[in-house]
Length: 155
Image (cartoon, rainbow, N blue to C red; front, side, top):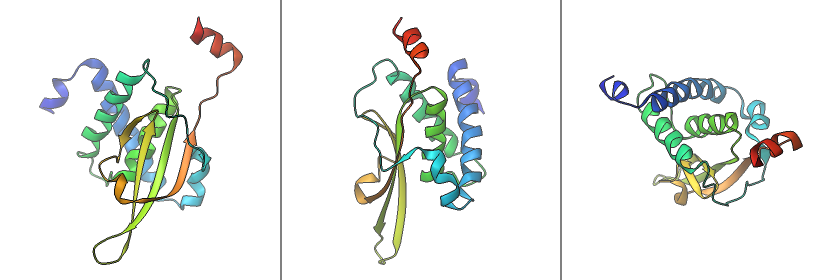
């Protein structure tokens, strides 16, 4: 609580938003994957790796909020929940992202899975473990602007 009170108003809003999306993502994780897959973006399509200097600071703040909150939820908020929550937070801001699913075998030979989220060249969640996994699924969420929205953005 002390940490939350010391945050900037912007970061407090991100933390509250991350809490809500982590809860929502945890509910989604309880559903059959086939039911939620279509909401994750276009299957086997990656978004561009091009750097987004305009949103870079915001991407880093979102990643920070997700990591802070995921350690403090009373439900499990591990890799897939974090990746889905991050994707939804980026979607809300009209920022492209790609969610990756990977599998590997642990030291006992059992199949294990991992998920991570990327936007441009930045990995927002799951990057610390991603190199240990073989990618088996990719979901790209490309935000397409209407001509009216594009002219507003470009001035």
